[in-house]
Image (cartoon, rainbow, N blue to C red; front, side):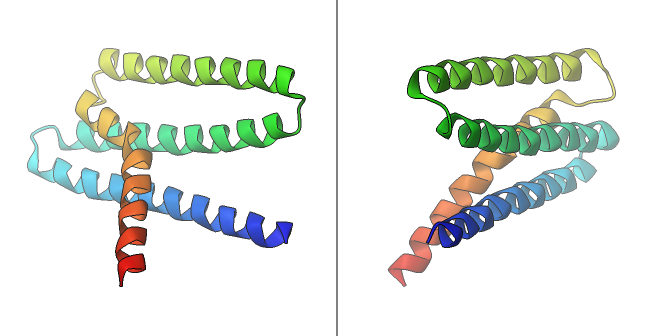
Length: 130
């Protein structure tokens, strides 16, 4: 039964990451209507790739924490949480100081995972109602 549950989780994680990539593609297409097309697309790409990597890091962190005693796992998860947000700040800072990246594109890429989760949840509710 564990294998079935794990396969289901992997499928959901894959759907979320594919959804995030598609959302980044859609955001990138909006870049063609802007004057800074390349900067916007590169920003969405930077933010999107980072958000997908961050999503995988969360997965690995939680999997590892589940194997630890509760006292150690809490500190481990809190430390990883702080580091992830520190790195997110570094990505945003780099996007601001490096002129080739459009900061709005980076921010849209950073929230692609969140949009993907929300859309998957919305589609799931619609399919359940039918």
